[in-house]
Length: 119
Image (cartoon, rainbow, N blue to C red; front, side, top):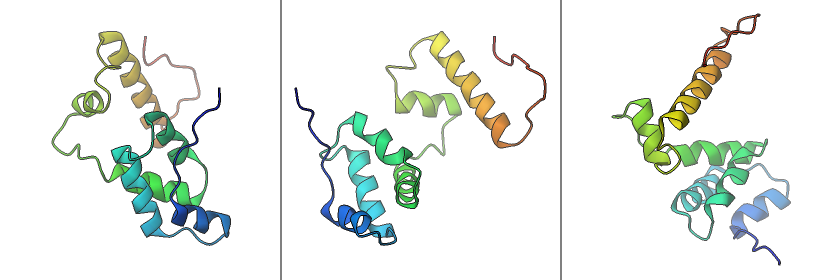
């Protein structure tokens, strides 16, 4: 049947619908609510963070501020985010390969030949 629409912060909508420059306080409020799942489902988070506009980028940056992985290794940090998904060796291996490939792309060390880093 009909899907429930995600709750929307009236102040955030006003900023976006008026075409005004998105403000940091609205991004912080939305990020906090997304992190706490305050009137949002887990499935609502990614669409808010992945839009290609200034406001969504601000929200994504503020959302990440809610996490503290400073005392963890990468595998501990990833497991703490989603313990059900990362419960097998295969899932850890797949995710590790993806992180390695992204890191390589990010730092410009992309090889011209196909090199199977993860097999």
